Figure 1 (cartoon, protein in one colour):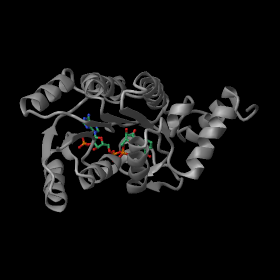
Figure 2 (spheres, protein in one colour):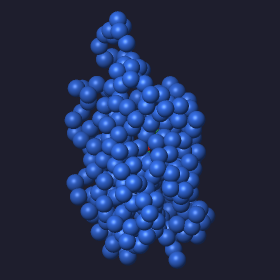
Figure 3 (cartoon, protein in one colour):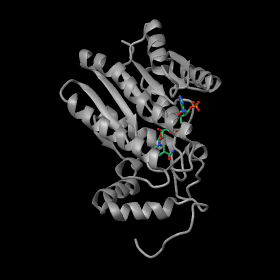
Figure 4 (cartoon, protein in one colour):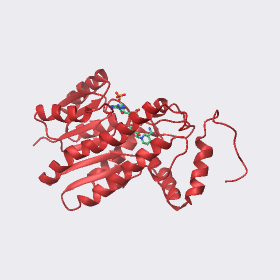
Length: 264
Ligand SMILES: NC(=O)c1ccc[n+]([C@@H]2O[C@H](COP(=O)([O-])OP(=O)(O)OC[C@H]3O[C@@H](n4cnc5c(N)ncnc54)[C@H](OP(=O)(O)O)[C@@H]3O)[C@@H](O)[C@H]2O)c1
């Protein structure tokens, strides 16, 4: 029997690599993002290479009613979602008081609302069928607050918290719910966030590989790479005031006012 994976943010980066892994594993795919031509290019490649059926739905998930339109279109096409990959997301970097209010509202609607609504739409059916997978993409940013990327870090903390709770709720049903928490990854993410981080970045195909393997084995929280795992362990152990100060200094934009170096 064919199984279908729905991947949000499948046009580039981690989402594209997750779509490749799902198709390689024999899942038919539903690809979602705003960039229709790119999704159609990927559809052609996946169908040819892996002999699966691929459906494209191009829409902006941060728009009002977007998830409703998507789930209706999927139902109208007679498709069932067995594997939900909530990957689409973006970040904003800078001073909270300076950043554009509408862009940050859009960020919350995409990273939080759309992810929650899609999980609400498809998790009940999976539980009823005693089979299915949900992989939500958070970040190492989920483990502590992040000055100068305050909204982004907060959205990812929500994704981590929600997913861990759902992992516990569906225990024993046969459904796997996992959260992928990548560290810096080599994608278009930093470009869109407007902050180029001078740190080494993991290739996105490797991040996707760990995420895919993690959800298949029902791992609750997946942190790819030893250095990211150390970062997360440090964030858990460190007093909040210290991690806040480190991130405040590390992420402070050069034009964000004078630095007080008297205390840490
Ligand atoms: N890169 C990193 O360092 C990093 C680290 C930790 C976590 N993450 C998380 O990983 C996930 C994937 O990001 P990425 O690094 O692969 O970045 P990316 O290359 O910028 O990919 C983001 C994807 O989301 C889609 N998307 C963005 N806005 C959308 C919208 N309004 N509606 C529908 N789709 C939308 C984009 O497609 P279109 O532009 O075609 O819409 C694209 O496919 C995100 O949730 C991000 O927060 C990334």
